[in-house]
Image 1 (spheres, rainbow, N blue to C red):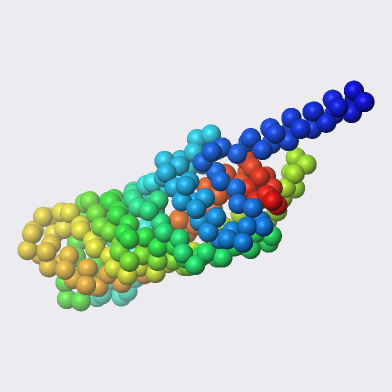
Image 2 (image 1 turned 135 degrees about the horizontal axis):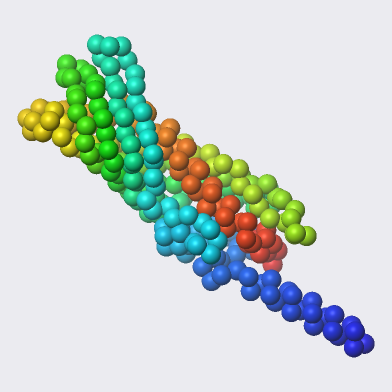
Amino acid sequence: MYALLTRLCLTATLFTTVLAVLPPYIKPCKKSDPDINKCIIRSIDQLRDKLSSGIPELDAPAIEPLHLKQIRLSRGPVGARLDVNLTDLQVSGPSSFKIRDFKADVENVVFTFKVSFDSLNFQGKYQIDARVLLLKLTGQGELTGSFHDYDSDVILRARKVFRDNDTYLNFERMKVKLKIGKTNLHLSNLFGGDTVLAAASHELLNNNNNLILDEITPVLETSLAELFTDVANKITKSFTYRELFPDN
């Protein structure tokens, strides 16, 4: 009898310890919750501040700012060539994401949703040698700008992995399809600082921003997908599937 009671006490202690593992900033969602989609969105919103600055105890990186090492744009014939090299881009605003149309298949661990941002601001360095319409653009210096009306379709899928006598989740790279409504760009030191030519060039670039967007968008899609997938896996590596999505 004593042995049985000891075993029960030990089991209860272990069970309590498991339940206490989740930190207060991670809110589990019961699989039986009829509003589990709303529950998951609330959990993500409560995690927003942590996501912005990073979670050192889980080795999860900060999502602010997003760093893009290089974007090279090179296209067109010699007479209408676009050759732009963007480096060391720092993008601020990823933590301001808004989630909508969220649909969760918790059993198969597939999440589909839309993510939007009011704006993403960026700064970095540029080198340009291009001809846009009748204007030849040359120069190098600092680049600043912003994306507006930014929207995306997202699919996030995970595999259940059995490890350490329990089940964990491992996410595949997130699939992100971006739609960017408008971009504003400013290139310092364009034409060696000639303000008249620079003003005309900025107006032309911003009125034809699809030239830049067509090249930047795939890089942003890949970078955002890799960043958010990495953060998701750092979190799920530390907690079991049952802790994150308890049955009851």
